[in-house]
Length: 286
Image (spheres, rainbow, N blue to C red):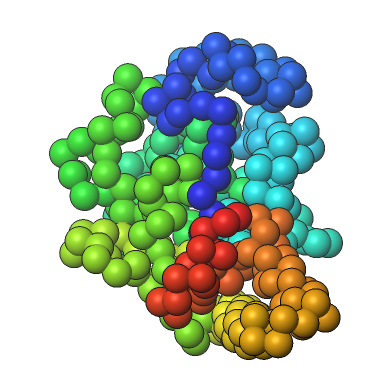
């Protein structure tokens, strides 16, 4: 999962038109959805909500919207960290737009979070697999604070799902040397539950993902070992050639932890978990 930095806070969900930092194409999109949201608030029943949302669903497929969201993550899925290629990036509604289910799969809100169907703060960029697996699940910890309509404050909820837009949430997710997603160390029982539920419902431990992450993990470790060996050799011999080789190895390693690199968070984690101060410094440099 990638920590995504956006020019708005989640509590600005009803004041996005006041965010000056948004690019003009996104401001134009906000103008298009404003009357749609106004009409949606006039619908009364779940069936009316669903019908109107279905009628206007092309709005969240807007190419300008997706292109902007792709740039935020260097063309990577916000959940899996896999690059988009020929596949089609999907807009995932963090809070489900039509119905919402608890952790047991029981529908607890017939209308879902319909009022957030066309709200930028509720959009996440996803590969098809995690989007499909998550479906309409959306359990929360404090069930009495569940929002049921646009007059309720959904920000009073404590979601089980980790959120790429929540500053702290991505740091709760870690990885081991087999490429598996695991809870970060020193997390509370509730946070571990959130991590495990997120991993399960988004399919973050799919076998193919684990294999690819394990390869990045091992490659990062090998490159760091090679860099350490060459650095020691250069210091011992005083050879400029050896120093050049050490720098070359470091550049290879740095390429793996660039934000634009696939699975860069795994490369960083592999370095941090060596416990070596130089490895930790390298991982923290980018």
